[in-house]
Image (tube, rainbow over all chains, first blue to last red; front, side, top):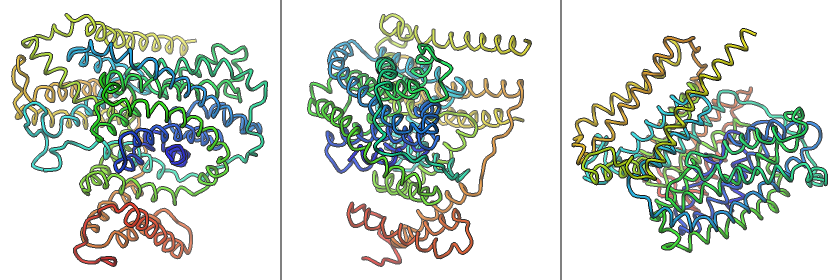
Length: 477
Length: 150
């Protein structure tokens, strides 16, 4: 069901995995924790694949990590090769997803033992590194990403202080004692804001027709795609493990690597199957990598894993080093479901491509009110309060304006989820050290994490300066 | 003043607001940070980052104001807030019909659109009522005035 629902919503242009999971998250509240995590994982896989379908057939990326699929996937469709493009996207995703599940199985437990070495200073430093990384990778501006991250942290402080019990920024509104809800925030920023963006231009779409029979890649396609799939899988997994890594980053990095490794780089952008195989494998593999960090350290490294983190917290489950020992049913249930989800993705979604194409044909002016209604009811159903609906709309406006002014929402969401852990880490560390910040440097692991964060920041400005120098030289030339 | 400057002024305002409120929360001391400690620190960082963008926006080439299409989005927001208000007084089915009617009427701009608008609004409202009210049993607010299905 998760794979089916995820693909159905993921196919809609502009609604990516984050938006899809946000919109469908309320469905999980009435079911058991294991089932809800399984459902959300299925939704993710489905949404990722749905986004690829839109990229290949309509040249509109379903979400950020499908942007690169547009570059070559759509060109393949224009040459009458939409079938192999869709097929290799599905097979690549399947192989990468399966590998990342194996990685999750074997790495989570050892990493969770390593995580026991983490104390409050290490957690604080890890989150600082994670936020630095995600802002470093910001598409538009690191400074703007830092602004949105700082705002995300501030939003996380709304509500009752966990140590003293004092109300913060509630202004006498009782419901704010529980804090700003994660769902109104993400559904507003990703769901409602996307609807608003799409309302700017209610485009008509040209969709390429494709025959089901032509969906299997031929021998040459497999020969060309084999190594990109392997490289994309490994690269995506590693990027997913790092706090701040993400599926879009994994797919962009894989595209760059494949272009570099190709014997015919001039074909990229004109229908090179490597440009579809590598990125599609990378973005699926990054999800599994992100789960390793989520389950072992209890730190969600990506926005999607942050949503899973929120879902688990709502169900009363604390991700972290003790999850595997205290809730083995959740961990192994998820692993088993990820295998199944990958298989279902392949065998259900490919025959259903005709159905997804029909959904794409539904005009935007009919779809957007439906999506808005779904978001309203979905967010209302969490705490049964219309206040959350109002919050969601305000965040939707904020998300729309942030997009217009080039501020990215991902650092905001990640900071919002990590804020309580950051604060707890800082306050406990200062108590332990008697008020000295040197505790973050005296402990080796913490010092290393902060050192890497510092290096990233310095390298950002150094390479920025280099880019500016090269730009000036090009202009002079 | 370019868009960068305007955007950063907004964030400076947000940061100052959180900082002033945070100070009243008891910042504490380094040995024992209070509930206002990190909020004030974070708000200060927000203001500093925004100042950096403001200075850059004022000194470098002005970025033109982005084109913001107000009408449809404004109408969507207002109609949802109206919908929230309506739900307190009338039934979910009727409220949803009114909301969908407003949205479809705004988005469908053909001639003789009213039969289509009425039909789509009724169909969506009924489907939503069946799914959320009957099947999932979402506990919507009890309407104070009008309820078709009590």
